[in-house]
Image (cartoon, rainbow, N blue to C red; front, side, top):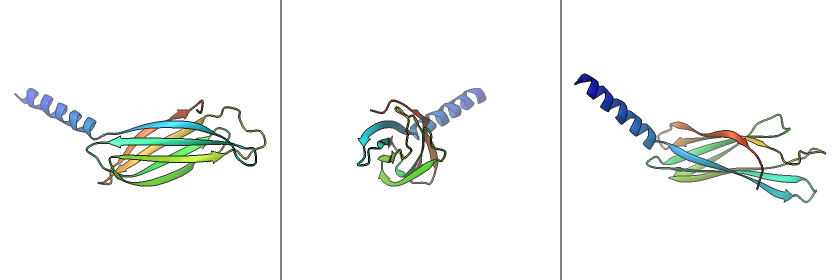
Length: 125
């Protein structure tokens, strides 16, 4: 009986863990040239969760050829949320099809933080 109880507890914990996830997706856009002829890009993160309510999110990005990471934080109050960051290349010879590294974390209404997405975005739309 003990083995059966342990199995049920493990499955219950796994089921609860799966239910308490925040799902996210990323989009990467080429926004054209600014008024000075410099290329502009936007990274957009979208999140959804249920039954967790989103409180905030943090989008951290680093574009190809840029040494530093940049952070954008947004507050949320619901089951969906977006966070985005736009940037312009100011160097004289920017990459023609740059990649962008991105990390997205979200905090729920209880203050628990979740790693939602991490990866490299390529081929801006």
